[in-house]
Every structure is written in C-alpha cells, then in structure tokens.
Image (tube, rainbow, N blue to C red; front, top):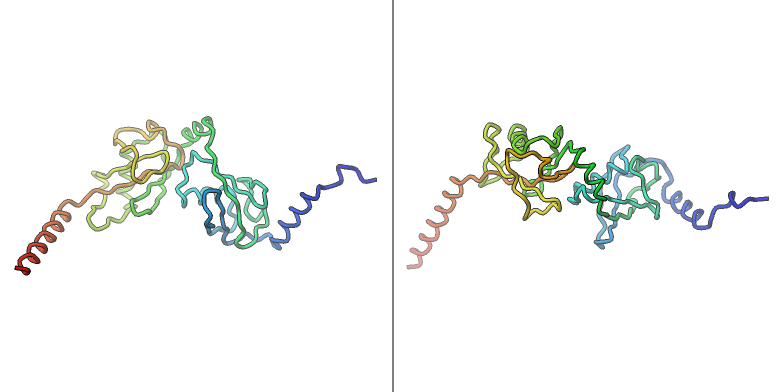
Length: 233
C-alpha cells in the first residue's frame, strides 16, 4: 500500500518536470534574463562558469546600482534560489528567465554589514565603477582619495585634472540610496565608519576641475561671439 509520504503533489511534479525539461544539461548558462516587478523590460546579464547565486546577485546589484541595504531574491519557476548554490545546480538553460524582487534588509542585518566593511565601489559621473578593497570602518576618506590617485583609477576627461596622490584633491559624495545628484560630501579626516557605510557601498567621485582649461575655453567662446557680431555689422 502506498503511504501519503510516498506521494508527491501534482504541483510539485509539474514544477519538477518544467524545470528539467527546460534544462537538459548541468552546464551553467552564459547569460540569464531578469524580470523585476518594477519594470516591464527584461534585463540580460552575462554569467561565468561556476558562478553562484550570491555572485550573480552581487553582479546585478552593481550593474543596477542597488544599495547593499537591499536584499535581492531570485526565483526560478517559483523556487527561491539559495546564495551558496551555483547556477548549474538549478539546471538553468541558456537565457533562463529569473524573477527578482528587492526587499529592505532588517536593521540588524545592516548593522552587521557595517562591521563587515571591507570594500567600497567608487562611481564616476560618467558611470564607470571601480572597486577599492582592503578597507575597514576606521579607514579615512583621505585614504580612499589617495588610492584613487595612486592607482590612476579614473582617466581625466576634458576640463578635469587627474588626482595627484601626493595631494589628492577631489570630491567623494556618499548617499545611502545611490543618488548621483545628491548626497553628503565626505571630509578627508573622517572615517568611513563615521558615515555609517556598509560593505560594498557606493561613493560618487567628482574629479578636480581644470580651471585654466575652462577659462581658456570661455575666453575662446567669447572671442568667437565677438567676431561673429563684427562680421554682421
């Protein structure tokens, strides 16, 4: 006689069949698609062999500028995916469509992330993001600026200067919501922990302005306008 424990619900059987028929092999996909509740558009992300769910979440958070104060949940056919598992564990086919939801972390989790501060991301105005590792809550803002200058992490664009590691004059702005147009300008002598930063937080980098270049550019534009005005007379 078959016991109740030996039976699977039709829902479980159907879901298992759906997952297996979509994934004939255990090879990890080279790309996945993400669907969120806040957008109708599908987002596509490249993946790597052996990538875990947690690593994919971190990749998504970086690309979408999602605050580490938010917790990402990925689902595959309704099943919540576990961070330590690899993508191949779930037999994802090429271009698999995953559903993602974003939730605010509990206050206790955020406090723990503050003590785990080991790296921050620095984002330029044009969207380039670099990772600075080996830091801690007691690291000073000045140290971050000096690292930017020493490693030449950002190539100066027209109208701006490179950061001098001996005198790292630049501006770093911090916002818990990753705002590119607002935030708190950081003071050189203060620590990262004093601003309540958490691991993998983002700082907005504003390079020093090349005032001499801007003055010459303004003078040239003024001269061009005066010349054009004389030609009309």
